[in-house]
Image 1 (cartoon, helix red, strand yellow):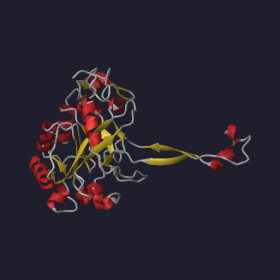
Image 2 (spheres, one colour):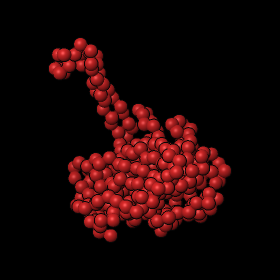
Image 3 (tube, helix red, strand yellow):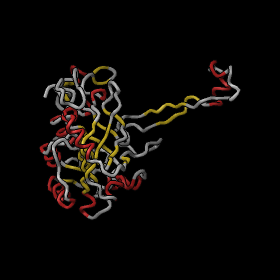
Image 4 (cartoon, helix red, strand yellow):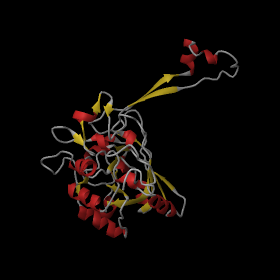
Length: 306
């Protein structure tokens, strides 16, 4: 399928090599997913963000800082447009939000993870040739397509009868198949697959979360999901994958398999507790990233509609 194919739901012209299978979703795929909605119920899949929120230790903490306030504006007197014809004493509050795009619920762009001496990522791009002073020039967040497709929840924790998987517990393709069979759910090409470990049931209590850090899918599961035709793979943990990695050569093997080898976007810290509680295993999945040039991912607020 070429970037100019008229059957695509979203045009990717001019982004050759920067858009993976999620950009190949057809109009038929989107319409089929939309027609699956029968109840009109919306599930919010985003965790709340706040100053001091739990974040993977590789990333900086989030800060939300007031920038302008009514009292500060009044005392500084530097907003001329508020000084006349304002008997209502109208004013405003604005803020600076500072933090990584990889905080809370977010999607990874292809340039987020690199491998090799040339530090290359999906699409044949590398740090040697495609990384500028203000971020990657190819495969950044501005290339993220909007995603509207069928979503599937694989409730691994629920199938195993536990509230939360143990810390660093690996999830194999066999575990995924068993959970799907127990749910009477099947995967189809072009699905967004979301995997529940139960980790977000403890959010935002960082101290309670610490002992359960690192559960997730292993490379075997990642390759199986890619073979099933998934366009997005998400989970309810900071890294989606088992940590420490079971691969002795690669500390983030699942990111390498999905993002670099297959061009499959990863979504992390997806809140899946409500879907699991209601046993909603199939749904319309909608996620749109922010088009931030040079960013290696985007905060998102994905939803499931049934």
